Length: 191
Image (spheres, rainbow, N blue to C red):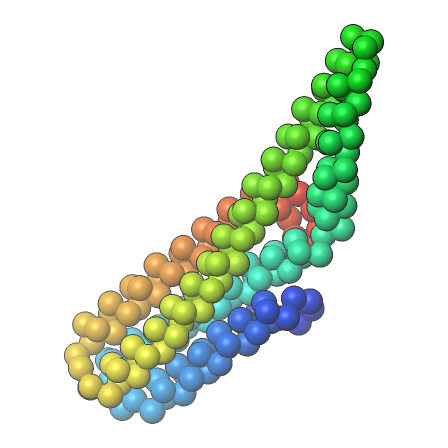
């Protein structure tokens, strides 16, 4: 079972709680179906949803850690002060070697600022992906209710299962993308 304990960010916890509510409702709905191929397929779908929510939890953990990362926060705050100060100092400096060192330092700090901005953007996209995944779970829940209420053939259940598999893969890609640049377990830039 995926574990949501330790998440500090309340909105993230709320999203995961809602995802788990959908999961429980989907399982309960599938249980009420009469035995047969349709029910078996819907049960497999429920297992895929479990993996889907597991990916959501992994993504939420990364977001949660990033939001409280003291190094990133400190760098972001410090750069807002140091870059303008170095710019001002460069305009006043007359010694060519000192100017060169200031320019090098400014370039390094601007590069760090750009990297932090890219990381911020990636995390914002990840948070939006969580919102999208939650909405998709709601859609899956309503589709499962529809499939069950119409007693339709299993084609619709197959399409639903394929959609869920695609969502699981998409969400895992987002998690992997974030892992490339940020390792939440060490509270800092990744590998």
